[in-house]
Image (cartoon, rainbow over all chains, first blue to last red; front, top):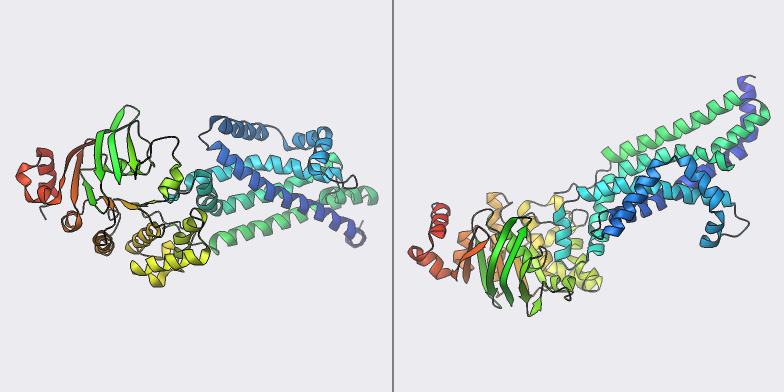
Length: 230
Length: 244
């Protein structure tokens, strides 16, 4: 096997690798967006003075952070596709594995996002909530318009970093037979008998994307400073 | 307009307010003073329900702040409050700070809210700062913007919680000037402040607190003019802060 061989193998396999990358990025994007939304809801529940809500959020976070992601993924794929199918009304033609992976990653990441956002909310001074309340805003409106925007802005680097971890973790979808980038690379390797090279190549691609994304986060941190809290 | 009836409050075993009663009539300017930890800030925060009370009742225009049946948010939207640390919203421009509650709470249209906001910004001398963010303004400007924010809601009365305590000395006067102007226009005001010059100039009444109790509640002329008739604690306080 020469380098030339590897490159020609890669060139031939580019469409399936690209399709795999699209799947990986789709899962990441959906899980980041819904993970942050659900995570924000969980964070607000956790800080709520209504005890049952706080207990639910705490239990959810503790549970999902205590079990391996790969089990959440399998569990979702094996036990709840019917539920997902009826809940989201997905057509039978849609790949249920992709949908169940998106739901599993969203729910799993929300546990991590909620802790980041909770820290962000607690870092916003208590006076901001008082000021919003004093202007006649009820608790949830004050949270939504005043506290959360500040909390999210302060935690953007942490949220994005968690997104990078999530991107790497999407490679775990191989357990439910979904052809993400890693799985596509592995399939090609099995077909062409160049496992070591292909896995190294796949690892290199993950490395480059993650490094670029991290550099982006750093640039955002130093370059795009939003107006500092007076 | 504001009635405070036998209000008591404790944090755990610590008694912050003991049996406080007073009232503020429409158009009246009442200054609350007293040493640190005397409960004056807590008292003013109980008036719009930011601090719940354990005993007693507070009524604003006859509506009880302490009753669970009261729509507290609606009531608060009619009571302006200015905080020691300004508490402008740092993620919003000055004009958005002034319009967000008008739009979201009072349901005003954006252009109507902006007109009102700009009018009050002009009145506090910040006409040209509308597009800036709070962090781009000086402390005095931020506090004047915070006063304009409270006024944009067309409040029936204004509460000030040590509005000049966090300011550099040279910025105190620009904020006091705005407050004096408000007082002279007949705004109902309750101010927690150490600025005795402000009290002398515009207050109708002075409340002196110590140890969570209202010790003196008297007219300004009586408070400053007849020092010999004051309680020992008030005399001590006054002699310390009026020395200079």
